[in-house]
Amino acid sequence: MAIAAPAIALNSDADDSKDAIKLEAARANAADPVKTVRFIRAIDSYEVIGGTSVLVWETNTKAWLVEVRAGESCQARHLDRSWAVGLEAAYDTMNTSNGYVVGRDRMRCKITEIREVNVPAMREAQRTAQMASTD
View 1 (cartoon, one colour):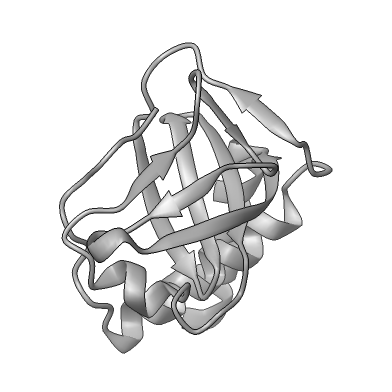
View 2 (cartoon, rainbow, N blue to C red):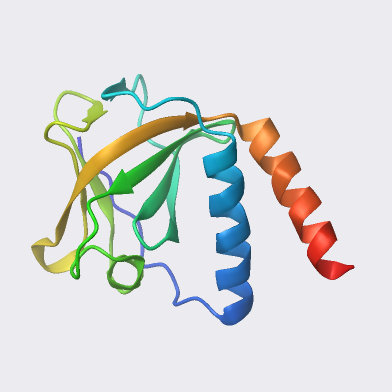
């Protein structure tokens, strides 16, 4: 399965701060890693939220934190500049054995970890962190 979406705009400093908060909240509220995720329906969307972290939204209430292998070509700054980012996986699954996050110009970033995120807890952690940062 492959999905694609329009390019993500380059981040401003404010966006970088929000992404850092979202990444911290996602990691704090993610379950233990799994090797494979099977999707019943098409993926809703994705967000690049860190240097090697992508939040894959199966629905607006179910998300997976996907980490890709670190490397010069697999950094969020490269994914953000892509015209499209897709998840490449066989048979409607995303996995760590042969799954990739795919960007423009055949850029392929190997998936190294997949963790289901407790979305309500992540959103609450984000709200708390954002309120604390404005105090």
